[in-house]
Length: 380
Ligand code: ACO
Image 1 (cartoon, rainbow, N blue to C red):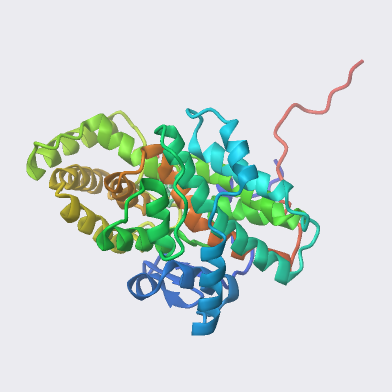
Image 2: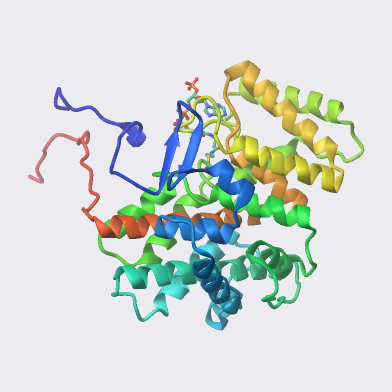
């Protein structure tokens, strides 16, 4: 290795480009979308408004929102070609594979693949955003042997998502927690999946290819897959509805102490950027608390508290967004494997905004490597 080469393993600490989409500030534990604190957006805005903010840089006017709402509500039905492709996939494959396939099918059928003008890119972003909930809802239902539910145009995005998944009109408390989760999951600067989307875009490939790749990156348990892994941890410890919060906390605490003694990585904790807590967790935790009250499941919070306390005491590592999001989706009734596809539905907004930003000021992303294989040798 040359003396002056410094390898930035995992690109940790590398600033790869500018972005105007979001600002993650680890020092102040804050997250801004286009300048607005995410907590303010989660308190006051719909997910549809936040999506438009991420794509265009500004919150929509009333007319812009009305036009987008009309488009969104008119195009929610599952594309028959996507349904046919999903039906070819086994019901026990991972739902992330279904989501990845669905976006790939949409891309293959889009005759604007070579058109990357800003207007067409925005249209594609909005079309993928609108199409995806039907994929998740259908996949959840077919795994349970249930019939597809047609969307309703009198419901907003979050209400319709839950309606088409469960076939029941959701309670306002549940809709609100779901809306908040979508907003918090929407965007987070150059995380692994977003960077994947930007790398693919930088080669001048089309938006659907970039999003398909991003879904692959999100699937891993060090990234989006952690929200599922959190619930698997809860299940491993044992979810006992008859137990008190204190009893559950005590069991979870000893489980964590053992896991750390065994040098296990416990999903839902730690973050590459935030080292003193994830800015999104307090807002998501409030949504989880609301769901725990709504469903009357205090014992789950015992497990939650026990793991968090033990991790904090032993290693001073804080929960990330996936930690409160996992049990929230569980309480709503989603199968655990569906949690990361829900993350896709939200993050599609950020990914597509980054595709457009990368495209607008492109440079091929192509780092160097330091060779450490065999010395030069010859066949004879
Ligand atoms: N459980 C146990 N120990 C941990 C954890 C964890 N979840 N996270 C970090 N550590 C420890 C590491 O073992 C390491 O300890 P050591 O110095 O004694 O070896 C130290 O903290 C630093 O950890 P790294 O993995 O090197 O930190 P990095 O910044 O590379 O990793 C990451 C960040 C990948 C998120 C890591 O914290 C992790 O694996 N967490 C679990 C997966 C997870 O929850 N991912 C979701 C991310 S957020 C999101 O996608 C919304």
